[in-house]
Image (tube, rainbow, N blue to C red):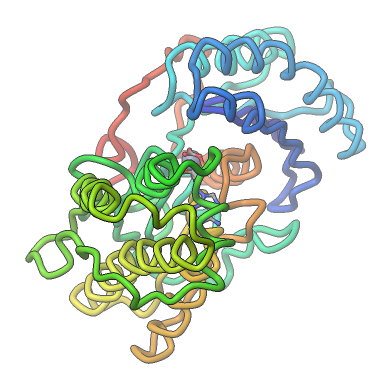
Length: 343
Ligand code: KG4
Ligand code: ZN
């Protein structure tokens, strides 16, 4: 029987229907354009958009899945981490639905769901090929390395001490007068630039830990622009700058991920989160994994960014193993740590 999942932790409203590892529907409404005007996610606007979009999206997902609401076996929802009021919209809707249907409510950790999103291929959750792995989660809000020792068992190895990688892309773009979100814009401009034109720091690349720190890199770009103010007006200069910054971010992410995989003696690397859409990251991680003899599972672009399919897939795996205690009383957990779940 199908599971319906709701995801509203940040600026994507999403409702998915999954049955036996098959994604029957994964409806997503992105608010990126709404927030672009403000140069970042405005929590109050995000909350209102979730309220506006959630029910139409749920209807659309059920229609696409060809499932009636009465057939739903369980309701899954992102409990955290995320923006408090945005999470509340999803959680209250999920609670109301579970209560009305007399079905269990499964509260899911957003990052734990990201850990398994690379195993969704097209419309199928492919856990038959699952291998222990090092998982890189890179988004606008988070950058972390996690060892997934077995399905539903993980260990947080390191995380960003300040800015996330996506935040570094977005803040650099802002310094360059480029629109929000900056990641995709820098990705496009960098494609025609010289990545060795400028030497920006690779923060903590050689540190003996799995942590990240990207705020210094953004500051290095700011100082660079103070010394070279005309550069952004020059198309060539702008492309070279984007390529150089992107390469500093990507080399740091790839270097630390591969090193952790070798040290932890796993054979597989996975990656998810919005920054995993970055073409250079996908390319360079693939090349580095090949050189190191590691298998790579990159989340497909639809499953890189926030989506309810990954929430439903994880809820289904947990329910099948009796690993959740469904309760209608779950509360949001905006700062929920990944270490607190399923270790
Ligand atoms: O996972 P996501 O959609 O939302 C959260 O932050 O939770 O990630 C959004 C982030 C933004 O910082 C955006 O600039 C970045 O992912 N991003 C990219 C690319 N596409 C999205 N960064 C670099 N290259 C891209 N192609
Ligand atoms: Zn996310």
